[in-house]
Amino acid sequence: MEDRELINLWKAQHDKIEQSLSINRRLLEETIHQKAHNALNPLKRLKTGGMVAFILYLIVLGYVLFYAISNYSSAANYFIVSMSAIALINLKGFTDYVRHLIWVNTIDYDGPVTEIQQKLLKLQLSIISHARTMVLQLPFWTTFYLSDTWFPHSVGLQYILFQVILTSAFTYLAYWLYKNQTAENLDKKWFQKLIAGSGGKSVAKALALYKEVEAFRQE
Image (cartoon, rainbow, N blue to C red):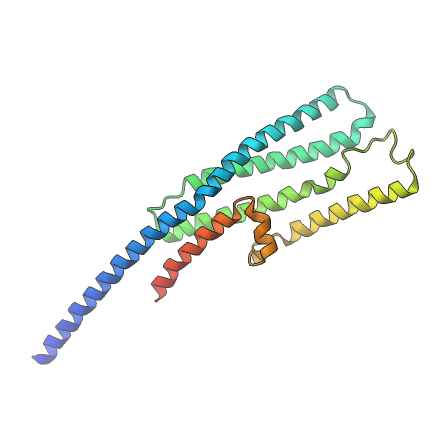
């Protein structure tokens, strides 16, 4: 009889502990949801402001390209090619910002934690992809000012070597950054700082918060 009473008492205590853990887990998740929502608010402002900046920048690029093409001469070939590449890359950057803002605004904080984590990881990977794409414009900023009316036939060998070295250096830098900006390097500070301006810091902070939920569940 005593054994049965002990078992019933143990079951009652066990149920209370489970109930308490369930309540604590729910409260923790609600707190994390609110903190994650607040952590992503700077990203929303960043993307909104960035979209406005992109629009103004693309208008300027579009205008100068339209002017160069409307008043075409072979002297503008370097400029047209370089500015076209820069404009296309920044157009891709603008669409990335629009997509990121839509994604972050459609996160359901009342949904499952795993689903929120998946959306945040998707956003993080897209931010990395955005950063990789944007560096591809670097070499074109070293060629837009050239003109076939004076380059290379009207300049000395020293300037030709300087231009080749400059463009090659920026091309290699763009290649190196494109190659090394990967999810595997997210633990490196230089990469964290590089994507912070695109919202990477906010997403990383939100993801770190949800790791607390996982740790609580494991405990």
